[in-house]
Image 1 (spheres, rainbow, N blue to C red):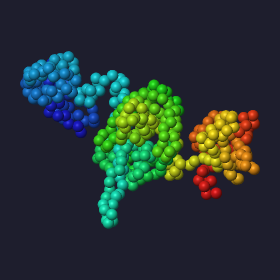
Image 2: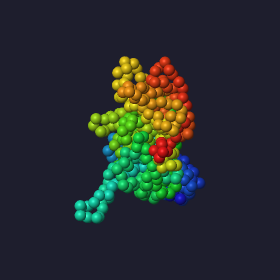
Image 3: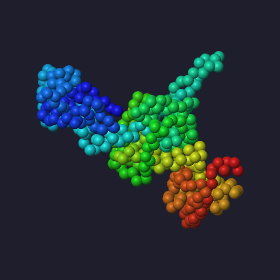
Image 4: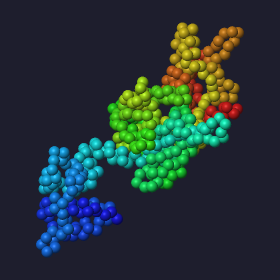
Length: 452
């Protein structure tokens, strides 16, 4: 049961006195408190023997109470120098029909529809965003066997499902021996607790890691997952983080560009990233990037800034890639990588050969297709050297109809397919554009090739 304060009860009477209303049935509610979370009535008093019962005059309020009531109602009182002026300002507001409301409700009432939408979105999603503190164990001295736990880094993460999986950036936990998750949920003791996290799996090349915490269901509120395939430059986005464990933060911006390329911590570029001008400050890495409806569209991963502070250029890993990676990490503990079992020339080597030949090589050159590999079984042929002369192998120019210009293009397109699915390749036999053929290769898990 929620009980009304003496200040509120007195204001109920003051409000009614200002209007001259009498409503006896409401007085009992004001005295007993309001049940079931119902809103407090704004009017109500009773008469006993012709006099107002239990009422306080406006002058009975202290200066602090008057300022608080005026402030909660959004009334400027900074020009009031005396208590009498505060009383008059409050009475004028009551005569003007200004009802009683709590501070938050009054503040929300002064916002426009767009602002209210953002505030409500933040209040809904913030409990799903966590602070992740990592630590390592260091020896206290060269001669001691005793270890000391030392903080090594921090970042943000967010709840993926009700089973306790938390998604973050791989670089947040890269050097960690221990990780602790805090800031989950709101409104109960469990939301104030710290939870030890275990590593479920990580994909360094995409800068994604999945942790798991054993937390009660009351603090596990998954974020709704959206799609990044139809993002438009100019649409609104919001970035939520929990930097340094102080509190949740919100920054707002737009999609500045799509299809960006960011260098990953594993050395390979992360393609298809979302660029945004929403500030992604230190400590926000691993937090969600949301659309205007609060749906996940990316995982904040990096900023472009010479100083290390936000410069209006932030990047997020697109959610379509995140969903595929996270689901595999949860199910298998690792990424299952489709492969054709072939070796290809790096881009620099291909450009060098093109210069020597005096002809363009627009594609990826097959260097080797080992026997019994999926590529060899499909008919791919690698380069060979005979009598000191180099004979070029097949040049892959398209994968499932999409042009490929670099090795990264080829790897990205193949890795987007399911293991065991068929990949249609357009190749130039012996790197000759006049001799074009189409081959179909069935992919396998790369780990199977390593064991064979």
